[in-house]
Amino acid sequence: MPIIKIPTPLRPHTEGRRELELEGKTAGEVLDALCALYPVFREHFYEENGELRKFVNIILDESHIKDLQGLDTPLAEGDTLRILASISGG
Amino acid sequence: MTTLNDQEFMRYSRHLLIPEVGLEGQLKLKESSALVIGTGGLGSPVALYLAAAGIGRIGLVDYDVVDSSNLQRQIIHSEETLGKLKVDSARARMLGLNPFIQVDAYNEPFTAENAMSIATGYDIIIDGTDNFPTRYLSNDVAVFLGIPNVYGSIYQFDGQASVFDAKNGPCYRCLFPSPPPPHLVPSCAEGGVLGVLPGTIGSIQATEAIKMLLGIGSSLAGRLLLYNALDMSFDYVNLKKNPKCPVCGENPTITELIDYEEFCGVPGHHADELPTEWDISALELKDILANSNPLLLDVREAHERNISNIPGSKNIPFGELASRLSELDTAQEIVIFCRTGNRSLYALEMLLGAGFRKLKNLEGGINAWASDVNPMLPIY
Ligand SMILES: [Zn+2]
Image (cartoon, rainbow over all chains, first blue to last red; front, top):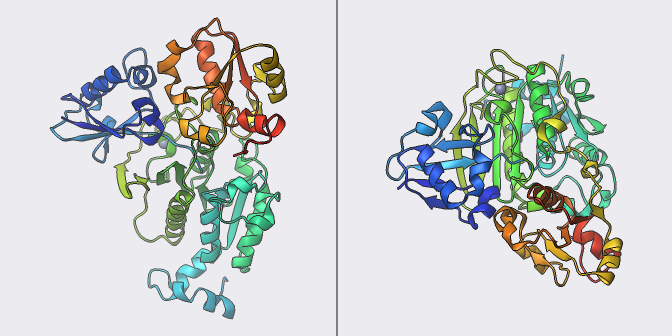
């Protein structure tokens, strides 16, 4: 199953878990599985029309999924998705 | 013509020995200028290393004074400069390290009103600010002036760095077109930061700035570095210029500086600009507790309750609040508190949105309670 890495600032929403193994054949399906597990992400991540909000960056390996096939980007067994958090501390 | 004096030849000897720098490179550094926004955790190592490297003119922008809670990471300041202006404290330390440079101090917040006049004339901007509005402002100023913006930011054990050089690649807005809602991502003042982390990220920013000024090596332009100190991992994300970027894209919609605090939905400089109609002071809370029995809701993280606590309070960390609303009763009076009153205000806004009305926010948080009501508690 693909793995999704949770960035530190969002870990309070995942009971502190750093990464999760979730069912899904595409980036969108894995995000759906995450939202099913932690519904708080549904409203944080998606616009009402189902598109990802602009501040949500999902990375596969070293590429942004918007530079691949977006939410339809296919995932292979063992692929790692990463949610990129914007942080502002200095 | 720029030259080095005898003392400078000696001082920069280890640079002069590197073929990629040499005398030509050192003279380039002496002729160049860099603007450092913020003299905090990131700004400290950035300003020190740029000064030591012999960047001819370094600008510093900050409006704060040195506080003892800064010294865990802001190593340009010291016990001796507590209470002094940060820009003056930093400037004195830099000139102590290298008297052969010029340091221009701007003791003011970096705002849409003054940013272009401050930044014009500098070769590069180094973004060491601690809030989203100033990060978008620094980015846009760099895009408009056509100069690189060396980005770094930190949170707890995580660091990010990149070079946003819109003439040749993506800018900050290409990656982050809009900031996250303020309640989703806590700041370092709320979530904390490992003291040495800005040393790592700030040193990377200084490295990138020096390389850009020298014109050597391959920079982080087009790549975002993700550092995690706990895992000691360095990962990269490839970044592309967004043709639809509102500021550096093909048809930009932002062509002059905007209202950045409105854009980010948060105040950039002063937390006291937040609404105050729900606030009560620590002394008012003391009176309320003498006469009634409201729920005291502590939205800090559980481990912070080992530092200080108000007996009888209920703990729901802010990050868990949205999923634990069912534990609260809209009919009950609720007084929300955190460390200093920021997280609790976001919690209050969230509860208002969920239909709660009998709410108060402890102004100044448990630290105000410690200072005004219970002096046995530490202030942190
Ligand atoms: Zn851009």
